[in-house]
Length: 340
Ligand code: AMP
Ligand code: MG
Image 1 (cartoon, rainbow, N blue to C red):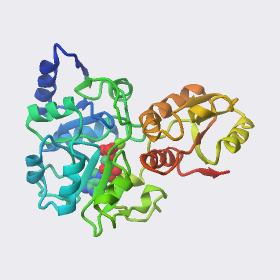
Image 2: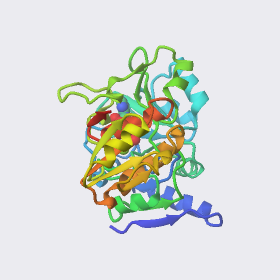
Image 3: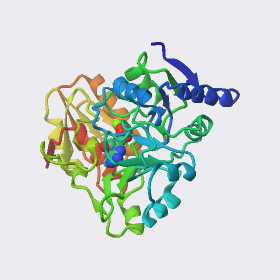
Image 4: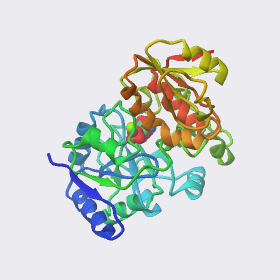
């Protein structure tokens, strides 16, 4: 298959949006920008298109997709009821990096929810994404536009590396400003539950849902026989080819530990640059969690270029957006954590 390259530019904007929408309306699959990461979009009403998304990504069939909408009217069609607290979250954080899991009205193709009675829905805060949804007139199911297991793509060039020749088109529209996937909150449990941390933080959610539960899969490895609320949590994720370890401890202990490792590289904080003597990549200042989130997946993709046998990643704090970064890194490291 030849993948069309659709470049967003100011003079051709409307035409490019229309082209992407046309492909989607005909049952094609298109990588589109969002504020979190690039998504691989398909009509949520079209089983065949959804199956092609799973195939192109190599995604396990039991890992459901998030449906992207451009207005709240669409939400009302897709779910049976919207609890008050879910409405309050949507009002405060949409459009934005927050996904709500609600009871499905079963209007979408059953493959979208991978057989579950629930549906994950989000309104992205990205003009191009919203315009493509609006122009197509369709709810768009869109998982991250990477090969399953690899780091999510924060630039269209990472999409191209993974999916060129396997999908109908890529919309090129620069880098994603958030960098980690959306926060996922389920209203299908009582009390509501944070299934995946993202740029809408646990602290912000607690202001509206004081008793929200942070699912234990956020920070722990699910047991092989355990039922997980969010099926995506049980899969190997975001992993570079280099064997990675997440290291907790302050800068001086971290530097002392990594500097004596052989054939190793490190993913470090900006302020540690002069302390680390082995090959390294910087993902931002330790106290600037938003920058760490923006850079983390790109760094995980670049780690393999250092050609080390092992990479030691300095763990971020679990505060604010740091929790989302920690959640991705502990998975990238297959739950290998070293506490100094
Ligand atoms: P991705 O599309 O790669 O951003 O992953 C979507 C995430 O949302 C995965 O972790 C899924 O397991 C989760 N998800 C999607 N739909 C549901 C649902 N109906 N119930 C629970 N989790 C869901
Ligand atoms: Mg993904």
